[in-house]
Image (cartoon, rainbow, N blue to C red):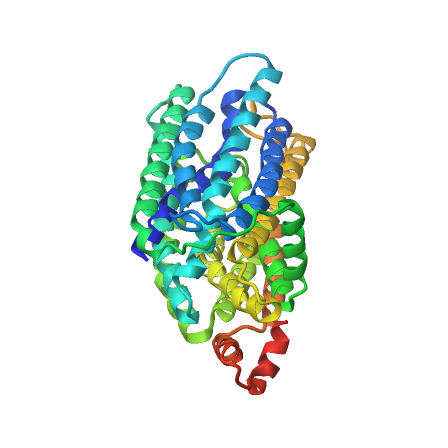
Length: 458
Protein backbone atom coordinates (compact mmCIF):
# COMPACT_ATOMS: atom_id res chain seq x y z
CA UNK A 1 0.00 0.00 0.00
CA UNK A 2 2.93 2.36 0.72
CA UNK A 3 4.34 1.91 -2.77
CA UNK A 4 0.94 2.53 -4.31
CA UNK A 5 0.25 5.61 -2.21
CA UNK A 6 3.54 7.37 -2.96
CA UNK A 7 2.45 7.89 -6.55
CA UNK A 8 -0.15 10.35 -5.35
CA UNK A 9 2.53 12.89 -4.47
CA UNK A 10 3.18 13.33 -8.18
CA UNK A 11 -0.49 13.18 -9.08
CA UNK A 12 -1.47 15.81 -6.51
CA UNK A 13 1.36 18.20 -7.38
CA UNK A 14 0.97 18.10 -11.17
CA UNK A 15 -2.83 18.16 -11.29
CA UNK A 16 -3.44 20.85 -8.70
CA UNK A 17 -0.65 23.08 -9.95
CA UNK A 18 -1.95 23.02 -13.52
CA UNK A 19 -5.57 23.35 -12.43
CA UNK A 20 -4.90 26.32 -10.17
CA UNK A 21 -2.16 28.22 -12.00
CA UNK A 22 -1.88 27.36 -15.68
CA UNK A 23 -4.57 29.79 -16.87
CA UNK A 24 -3.12 32.48 -14.58
CA UNK A 25 0.35 31.81 -16.05
CA UNK A 26 -1.01 32.13 -19.59
CA UNK A 27 -2.85 35.41 -18.94
CA UNK A 28 -0.50 37.17 -16.52
CA UNK A 29 2.90 36.00 -17.77
CA UNK A 30 2.56 34.76 -21.37
CA UNK A 31 0.11 37.57 -22.21
CA UNK A 32 -2.76 35.62 -23.77
CA UNK A 33 -6.29 36.82 -23.08
CA UNK A 34 -8.41 34.71 -20.73
CA UNK A 35 -10.61 33.34 -23.54
CA UNK A 36 -7.58 32.02 -25.43
CA UNK A 37 -6.10 30.62 -22.23
CA UNK A 38 -9.39 28.88 -21.52
CA UNK A 39 -9.47 27.49 -25.06
CA UNK A 40 -6.00 25.97 -24.66
CA UNK A 41 -7.05 24.20 -21.49
CA UNK A 42 -10.42 23.13 -22.86
CA UNK A 43 -9.03 21.65 -26.09
CA UNK A 44 -6.36 19.78 -24.13
CA UNK A 45 -8.99 18.45 -21.76
CA UNK A 46 -11.08 17.22 -24.69
CA UNK A 47 -8.05 15.35 -26.02
CA UNK A 48 -7.66 13.85 -22.54
CA UNK A 49 -11.23 12.60 -22.78
CA UNK A 50 -10.33 10.46 -25.78
CA UNK A 51 -7.00 9.42 -24.27
CA UNK A 52 -8.67 8.51 -20.98
CA UNK A 53 -11.22 6.31 -22.72
CA UNK A 54 -8.49 4.43 -24.56
CA UNK A 55 -5.93 4.11 -21.77
CA UNK A 56 -8.43 2.70 -19.28
CA UNK A 57 -9.53 0.03 -21.72
CA UNK A 58 -5.95 -0.76 -22.76
CA UNK A 59 -4.91 -1.23 -19.14
CA UNK A 60 -7.81 -3.66 -18.58
CA UNK A 61 -6.55 -5.71 -21.51
CA UNK A 62 -2.79 -5.26 -21.05
CA UNK A 63 -0.85 -8.55 -20.92
CA UNK A 64 2.61 -7.15 -20.12
CA UNK A 65 4.86 -9.15 -17.79
CA UNK A 66 5.08 -5.96 -15.68
CA UNK A 67 1.35 -6.21 -14.95
CA UNK A 68 -1.81 -4.63 -16.31
CA UNK A 69 -1.29 -1.14 -14.84
CA UNK A 70 2.42 -0.63 -14.11
CA UNK A 71 3.62 -0.09 -17.72
CA UNK A 72 1.38 2.98 -17.90
CA UNK A 73 2.78 4.36 -14.65
CA UNK A 74 6.30 3.98 -16.05
CA UNK A 75 5.36 5.72 -19.31
CA UNK A 76 3.96 8.70 -17.40
CA UNK A 77 7.01 8.90 -15.14
CA UNK A 78 9.28 9.21 -18.18
CA UNK A 79 7.23 11.75 -20.15
CA UNK A 80 5.79 14.13 -17.55
CA UNK A 81 9.10 15.73 -16.39
CA UNK A 82 10.04 16.95 -19.89
CA UNK A 83 6.54 18.30 -20.50
CA UNK A 84 6.48 20.23 -17.22
CA UNK A 85 9.84 21.86 -17.90
CA UNK A 86 8.81 22.95 -21.40
CA UNK A 87 5.28 24.07 -20.60
CA UNK A 88 6.40 26.53 -17.92
CA UNK A 89 8.85 28.29 -20.23
CA UNK A 90 7.68 31.72 -21.34
CA UNK A 91 8.12 31.93 -25.11
CA UNK A 92 8.05 35.05 -27.25
CA UNK A 93 6.53 35.37 -30.70
CA UNK A 94 3.22 36.04 -32.35
CA UNK A 95 -0.02 35.33 -30.55
CA UNK A 96 -0.68 32.42 -32.90
CA UNK A 97 2.74 30.91 -32.25
CA UNK A 98 2.34 31.20 -28.48
CA UNK A 99 -1.17 29.76 -28.61
CA UNK A 100 0.07 26.77 -30.65
CA UNK A 101 3.11 26.16 -28.41
CA UNK A 102 1.13 26.02 -25.19
CA UNK A 103 -1.74 24.10 -26.77
CA UNK A 104 0.59 21.32 -27.96
CA UNK A 105 2.31 21.07 -24.58
CA UNK A 106 -0.99 21.26 -22.70
CA UNK A 107 -2.22 18.31 -24.77
CA UNK A 108 1.03 16.50 -23.94
CA UNK A 109 0.46 17.14 -20.26
CA UNK A 110 -3.07 15.75 -20.40
CA UNK A 111 -1.96 12.64 -22.30
CA UNK A 112 0.81 11.92 -19.81
CA UNK A 113 -1.38 12.63 -16.80
CA UNK A 114 -4.21 10.35 -17.94
CA UNK A 115 -1.66 7.63 -18.69
CA UNK A 116 -0.83 7.64 -14.99
CA UNK A 117 -4.12 8.55 -13.36
CA UNK A 118 -6.59 6.07 -14.81
CA UNK A 119 -4.53 2.83 -14.74
CA UNK A 120 -3.18 3.74 -11.30
CA UNK A 121 -6.66 4.37 -9.91
CA UNK A 122 -7.83 1.05 -11.38
CA UNK A 123 -4.79 -0.63 -9.79
CA UNK A 124 -6.21 0.26 -6.37
CA UNK A 125 -9.28 -1.95 -6.91
CA UNK A 126 -6.93 -4.89 -7.53
CA UNK A 127 -4.70 -4.18 -4.54
CA UNK A 128 -7.61 -3.83 -2.08
CA UNK A 129 -10.64 -6.10 -2.49
CA UNK A 130 -12.61 -5.53 0.74
CA UNK A 131 -15.03 -2.69 1.57
CA UNK A 132 -13.01 -1.36 4.54
CA UNK A 133 -9.66 -2.33 3.01
CA UNK A 134 -10.40 0.02 0.13
CA UNK A 135 -11.15 2.81 2.59
CA UNK A 136 -7.78 2.26 4.27
CA UNK A 137 -5.96 2.20 0.91
CA UNK A 138 -7.54 5.45 -0.17
CA UNK A 139 -6.86 7.07 3.22
CA UNK A 140 -3.16 6.22 2.98
CA UNK A 141 -3.08 7.45 -0.60
CA UNK A 142 -4.70 10.68 0.52
CA UNK A 143 -1.89 11.31 3.00
CA UNK A 144 0.61 11.27 0.13
CA UNK A 145 -1.75 13.30 -2.03
CA UNK A 146 -1.77 16.06 0.60
CA UNK A 147 2.00 16.34 0.23
CA UNK A 148 1.46 16.73 -3.51
CA UNK A 149 -1.33 19.26 -2.95
CA UNK A 150 0.98 21.35 -0.78
CA UNK A 151 3.59 21.41 -3.52
CA UNK A 152 1.02 22.13 -6.21
CA UNK A 153 -0.98 24.79 -4.38
CA UNK A 154 1.34 26.56 -1.93
CA UNK A 155 4.86 26.21 -3.29
CA UNK A 156 4.26 28.17 -6.55
CA UNK A 157 3.20 31.35 -4.74
CA UNK A 158 6.23 31.14 -2.45
CA UNK A 159 8.55 30.63 -5.41
CA UNK A 160 7.06 33.64 -7.21
CA UNK A 161 7.71 35.75 -4.10
CA UNK A 162 11.41 34.86 -4.45
CA UNK A 163 11.47 36.30 -7.96
CA UNK A 164 10.00 39.82 -7.65
CA UNK A 165 9.85 41.41 -11.07
CA UNK A 166 11.09 38.20 -12.72
CA UNK A 167 7.93 36.20 -13.37
CA UNK A 168 9.49 34.16 -16.14
CA UNK A 169 12.29 32.82 -13.97
CA UNK A 170 9.83 32.08 -11.18
CA UNK A 171 7.45 30.06 -13.36
CA UNK A 172 10.35 28.15 -14.95
CA UNK A 173 11.70 27.24 -11.51
CA UNK A 174 8.29 25.97 -10.50
CA UNK A 175 8.11 23.81 -13.63
CA UNK A 176 11.46 22.19 -12.88
CA UNK A 177 10.46 21.42 -9.29
CA UNK A 178 7.11 19.88 -10.29
CA UNK A 179 8.89 17.85 -12.98
CA UNK A 180 11.31 16.39 -10.44
CA UNK A 181 8.55 15.58 -7.98
CA UNK A 182 6.50 13.78 -10.65
CA UNK A 183 9.39 11.62 -11.78
CA UNK A 184 10.54 10.62 -8.29
CA UNK A 185 7.00 9.87 -7.12
CA UNK A 186 5.79 7.88 -10.13
CA UNK A 187 9.00 5.96 -10.76
CA UNK A 188 9.18 5.01 -7.07
CA UNK A 189 5.57 3.79 -7.21
CA UNK A 190 6.37 1.77 -10.33
CA UNK A 191 9.29 0.03 -8.59
CA UNK A 192 7.57 -0.51 -5.23
CA UNK A 193 4.35 -2.06 -6.58
CA UNK A 194 6.04 -4.86 -8.51
CA UNK A 195 4.83 -7.58 -6.13
CA UNK A 196 1.21 -6.38 -6.29
CA UNK A 197 1.00 -6.42 -10.09
CA UNK A 198 -1.73 -8.51 -11.71
CA UNK A 199 -0.50 -10.18 -14.90
CA UNK A 200 -3.20 -11.16 -17.41
CA UNK A 201 -3.06 -14.09 -19.78
CA UNK A 202 -2.49 -13.42 -23.46
CA UNK A 203 -5.66 -12.54 -25.35
CA UNK A 204 -6.73 -12.44 -28.95
CA UNK A 205 -6.09 -9.15 -30.69
CA UNK A 206 -9.21 -6.98 -30.78
CA UNK A 207 -10.39 -5.57 -34.09
CA UNK A 208 -12.13 -2.43 -32.84
CA UNK A 209 -10.96 -0.99 -29.52
CA UNK A 210 -13.10 2.18 -29.78
CA UNK A 211 -16.25 0.13 -30.35
CA UNK A 212 -15.39 -2.04 -27.34
CA UNK A 213 -14.97 1.03 -25.17
CA UNK A 214 -18.38 2.46 -26.03
CA UNK A 215 -20.03 -0.93 -25.58
CA UNK A 216 -18.43 -1.20 -22.15
CA UNK A 217 -19.50 2.32 -21.21
CA UNK A 218 -23.06 1.60 -22.32
CA UNK A 219 -23.20 -1.60 -20.25
CA UNK A 220 -21.78 0.18 -17.20
CA UNK A 221 -24.22 3.08 -17.49
CA UNK A 222 -27.12 0.64 -17.42
CA UNK A 223 -26.21 -0.14 -13.80
CA UNK A 224 -28.22 1.99 -11.35
CA UNK A 225 -25.25 2.30 -9.01
CA UNK A 226 -23.11 3.68 -11.81
CA UNK A 227 -25.72 6.21 -12.93
CA UNK A 228 -25.99 7.63 -9.42
CA UNK A 229 -22.22 7.87 -9.14
CA UNK A 230 -22.11 9.72 -12.46
CA UNK A 231 -24.38 12.42 -10.98
CA UNK A 232 -22.25 12.53 -7.82
CA UNK A 233 -19.01 12.82 -9.82
CA UNK A 234 -20.46 15.43 -12.19
CA UNK A 235 -21.61 17.60 -9.30
CA UNK A 236 -18.22 17.53 -7.63
CA UNK A 237 -16.36 18.04 -10.92
CA UNK A 238 -18.34 21.23 -11.61
CA UNK A 239 -17.67 22.55 -8.12
CA UNK A 240 -13.99 21.63 -8.14
CA UNK A 241 -13.33 23.13 -11.58
CA UNK A 242 -14.92 26.42 -10.54
CA UNK A 243 -13.00 26.43 -7.26
CA UNK A 244 -9.65 25.68 -8.88
CA UNK A 245 -9.84 28.14 -11.74
CA UNK A 246 -11.51 30.83 -9.64
CA UNK A 247 -9.37 30.86 -6.49
CA UNK A 248 -6.53 33.11 -7.64
CA UNK A 249 -8.87 35.48 -9.49
CA UNK A 250 -11.26 35.69 -6.54
CA UNK A 251 -8.54 36.31 -3.96
CA UNK A 252 -6.73 38.84 -6.12
CA UNK A 253 -9.64 40.82 -7.54
CA UNK A 254 -12.56 40.33 -5.14
CA UNK A 255 -10.49 40.52 -1.97
CA UNK A 256 -7.41 42.42 -3.29
CA UNK A 257 -4.99 39.92 -1.74
CA UNK A 258 -1.41 39.58 -3.03
CA UNK A 259 0.42 36.33 -3.69
CA UNK A 260 1.74 36.02 -0.15
CA UNK A 261 -1.68 36.37 1.46
CA UNK A 262 -3.29 34.18 -1.19
CA UNK A 263 -0.79 31.48 -0.30
CA UNK A 264 -2.10 31.58 3.26
CA UNK A 265 -5.50 30.43 1.96
CA UNK A 266 -3.83 27.45 0.34
CA UNK A 267 -1.97 26.74 3.58
CA UNK A 268 -5.35 26.84 5.31
CA UNK A 269 -6.60 24.24 2.82
CA UNK A 270 -3.62 21.99 3.54
CA UNK A 271 -4.24 22.26 7.28
CA UNK A 272 -7.85 21.20 6.71
CA UNK A 273 -6.64 18.30 4.55
CA UNK A 274 -4.29 17.11 7.30
CA UNK A 275 -6.86 17.41 10.06
CA UNK A 276 -9.75 16.02 8.04
CA UNK A 277 -8.03 12.97 6.51
CA UNK A 278 -8.07 10.74 9.62
CA UNK A 279 -11.51 12.07 10.56
CA UNK A 280 -12.91 11.26 7.11
CA UNK A 281 -11.43 7.77 7.24
CA UNK A 282 -12.92 7.10 10.68
CA UNK A 283 -16.30 8.49 9.63
CA UNK A 284 -16.32 6.26 6.55
CA UNK A 285 -15.51 3.18 8.63
CA UNK A 286 -18.19 4.08 11.18
CA UNK A 287 -21.03 5.42 9.01
CA UNK A 288 -20.17 4.21 5.51
CA UNK A 289 -18.43 5.96 2.65
CA UNK A 290 -21.52 7.40 0.98
CA UNK A 291 -22.90 8.75 4.26
CA UNK A 292 -19.56 10.39 5.01
CA UNK A 293 -19.64 12.11 1.63
CA UNK A 294 -23.20 13.29 2.19
CA UNK A 295 -22.30 14.85 5.53
CA UNK A 296 -19.30 16.75 4.15
CA UNK A 297 -21.23 17.91 1.08
CA UNK A 298 -23.98 19.27 3.33
CA UNK A 299 -21.49 21.10 5.56
CA UNK A 300 -19.67 22.62 2.59
CA UNK A 301 -22.92 23.71 0.90
CA UNK A 302 -24.29 25.40 4.03
CA UNK A 303 -21.05 27.31 4.59
CA UNK A 304 -20.93 28.32 0.94
CA UNK A 305 -24.47 29.69 0.91
CA UNK A 306 -23.86 31.58 4.15
CA UNK A 307 -20.67 33.21 2.85
CA UNK A 308 -22.18 34.14 -0.52
CA UNK A 309 -25.25 35.83 0.93
CA UNK A 310 -23.64 37.45 3.99
CA UNK A 311 -19.88 37.91 3.46
CA UNK A 312 -18.81 37.40 -0.18
CA UNK A 313 -16.05 40.03 -0.05
CA UNK A 314 -14.79 39.41 3.47
CA UNK A 315 -11.43 37.78 4.15
CA UNK A 316 -12.97 35.96 7.13
CA UNK A 317 -15.85 34.81 4.94
CA UNK A 318 -13.40 33.62 2.30
CA UNK A 319 -11.42 31.72 4.93
CA UNK A 320 -14.59 30.02 6.15
CA UNK A 321 -15.53 29.12 2.58
CA UNK A 322 -12.07 27.68 1.89
CA UNK A 323 -12.33 25.60 5.06
CA UNK A 324 -15.79 24.32 4.08
CA UNK A 325 -14.78 23.53 0.51
CA UNK A 326 -11.55 21.88 1.64
CA UNK A 327 -13.49 19.57 3.96
CA UNK A 328 -15.45 18.27 0.98
CA UNK A 329 -12.48 18.32 -1.38
CA UNK A 330 -10.22 16.19 0.77
CA UNK A 331 -13.07 13.82 1.62
CA UNK A 332 -13.91 13.35 -2.05
CA UNK A 333 -10.37 12.62 -3.19
CA UNK A 334 -9.83 10.34 -0.22
CA UNK A 335 -12.94 8.18 -0.58
CA UNK A 336 -14.55 8.63 -4.00
CA UNK A 337 -12.31 6.12 -5.77
CA UNK A 338 -13.11 3.59 -3.07
CA UNK A 339 -16.82 4.16 -3.76
CA UNK A 340 -16.23 3.73 -7.50
CA UNK A 341 -14.26 0.53 -6.84
CA UNK A 342 -17.34 -1.11 -5.36
CA UNK A 343 -19.08 -0.92 -8.74
CA UNK A 344 -16.48 -3.39 -10.05
CA UNK A 345 -18.22 -6.21 -8.22
CA UNK A 346 -21.66 -4.98 -9.27
CA UNK A 347 -20.46 -5.15 -12.88
CA UNK A 348 -18.99 -8.60 -12.25
CA UNK A 349 -22.32 -9.82 -10.93
CA UNK A 350 -24.48 -8.22 -13.64
CA UNK A 351 -22.23 -8.68 -16.68
CA UNK A 352 -19.72 -11.35 -15.58
CA UNK A 353 -16.82 -8.95 -16.25
CA UNK A 354 -14.31 -7.03 -14.15
CA UNK A 355 -13.60 -3.70 -15.82
CA UNK A 356 -11.70 -1.59 -13.31
CA UNK A 357 -9.99 0.44 -16.03
CA UNK A 358 -13.19 1.20 -17.94
CA UNK A 359 -15.00 2.20 -14.74
CA UNK A 360 -12.24 4.57 -13.67
CA UNK A 361 -11.84 5.96 -17.20
CA UNK A 362 -15.58 6.59 -17.51
CA UNK A 363 -15.53 8.56 -14.27
CA UNK A 364 -12.36 10.39 -15.27
CA UNK A 365 -13.67 11.19 -18.76
CA UNK A 366 -16.82 12.64 -17.23
CA UNK A 367 -14.82 14.88 -14.90
CA UNK A 368 -12.52 15.97 -17.70
CA UNK A 369 -15.40 16.86 -20.04
CA UNK A 370 -17.06 18.93 -17.34
CA UNK A 371 -13.79 20.68 -16.48
CA UNK A 372 -13.21 21.52 -20.16
CA UNK A 373 -16.64 23.10 -20.44
CA UNK A 374 -16.29 24.99 -17.16
CA UNK A 375 -12.84 26.36 -18.03
CA UNK A 376 -13.99 27.53 -21.46
CA UNK A 377 -17.14 29.23 -20.20
CA UNK A 378 -15.29 30.74 -17.24
CA UNK A 379 -12.78 32.39 -19.57
CA UNK A 380 -15.43 33.68 -21.95
CA UNK A 381 -17.73 34.98 -19.21
CA UNK A 382 -14.81 36.54 -17.34
CA UNK A 383 -13.87 38.49 -20.46
CA UNK A 384 -17.48 39.52 -21.09
CA UNK A 385 -17.83 40.77 -17.53
CA UNK A 386 -15.11 43.32 -18.34
CA UNK A 387 -11.97 41.64 -16.98
CA UNK A 388 -8.69 43.36 -17.84
CA UNK A 389 -5.50 41.69 -16.48
CA UNK A 390 -3.72 45.06 -16.61
CA UNK A 391 -6.08 46.54 -14.02
CA UNK A 392 -5.31 46.05 -10.33
CA UNK A 393 -8.92 46.91 -9.47
CA UNK A 394 -11.56 45.24 -11.63
CA UNK A 395 -15.06 46.58 -12.47
CA UNK A 396 -17.97 45.60 -10.20
CA UNK A 397 -19.36 43.19 -12.81
CA UNK A 398 -16.13 41.20 -12.68
CA UNK A 399 -16.28 41.02 -8.90
CA UNK A 400 -19.93 39.91 -8.93
CA UNK A 401 -19.14 37.23 -11.52
CA UNK A 402 -16.21 35.91 -9.48
CA UNK A 403 -18.30 35.79 -6.30
CA UNK A 404 -21.06 33.77 -7.99
CA UNK A 405 -18.76 31.44 -9.94
CA UNK A 406 -16.43 30.78 -7.02
CA UNK A 407 -18.88 30.49 -4.11
CA UNK A 408 -22.53 30.13 -5.13
CA UNK A 409 -22.36 27.65 -8.02
CA UNK A 410 -20.10 25.12 -6.24
CA UNK A 411 -22.47 25.16 -3.26
CA UNK A 412 -25.42 24.36 -5.53
CA UNK A 413 -23.41 21.52 -7.07
CA UNK A 414 -22.82 19.98 -3.65
CA UNK A 415 -26.56 19.88 -2.99
CA UNK A 416 -27.05 17.96 -6.25
CA UNK A 417 -24.33 15.47 -5.34
CA UNK A 418 -25.83 14.97 -1.90
CA UNK A 419 -29.22 14.08 -3.39
CA UNK A 420 -27.63 11.45 -5.65
CA UNK A 421 -25.79 9.82 -2.75
CA UNK A 422 -28.95 9.80 -0.63
CA UNK A 423 -30.35 7.00 -2.81
CA UNK A 424 -27.04 5.25 -3.56
CA UNK A 425 -27.60 1.57 -2.66
CA UNK A 426 -24.09 0.30 -1.79
CA UNK A 427 -22.97 0.25 1.82
CA UNK A 428 -20.95 -2.16 3.92
CA UNK A 429 -23.90 -4.50 4.51
CA UNK A 430 -25.15 -4.60 0.92
CA UNK A 431 -21.60 -4.91 -0.43
CA UNK A 432 -21.12 -7.92 1.83
CA UNK A 433 -24.28 -9.42 0.35
CA UNK A 434 -22.88 -8.85 -3.13
CA UNK A 435 -19.57 -10.56 -2.34
CA UNK A 436 -21.28 -13.54 -0.74
CA UNK A 437 -23.63 -13.86 -3.74
CA UNK A 438 -20.65 -13.86 -6.11
CA UNK A 439 -18.89 -16.53 -4.05
CA UNK A 440 -21.96 -18.74 -3.89
CA UNK A 441 -22.69 -18.32 -7.59
CA UNK A 442 -19.13 -19.36 -8.47
CA UNK A 443 -19.53 -22.41 -6.22
CA UNK A 444 -22.85 -23.29 -7.85
CA UNK A 445 -24.81 -22.65 -4.65
CA UNK A 446 -28.08 -20.82 -4.04
CA UNK A 447 -27.80 -17.08 -3.29
CA UNK A 448 -31.46 -16.01 -3.40
CA UNK A 449 -31.29 -14.49 0.09
CA UNK A 450 -29.04 -11.71 -1.25
CA UNK A 451 -31.04 -10.76 -4.32
CA UNK A 452 -33.08 -8.01 -2.66
CA UNK A 453 -29.94 -6.01 -1.87
CA UNK A 454 -28.35 -6.70 -5.24
CA UNK A 455 -31.37 -5.72 -7.34
CA UNK A 456 -31.20 -2.19 -5.89
CA UNK A 457 -27.62 -1.88 -7.17
CA UNK A 458 -28.43 -3.03 -10.68
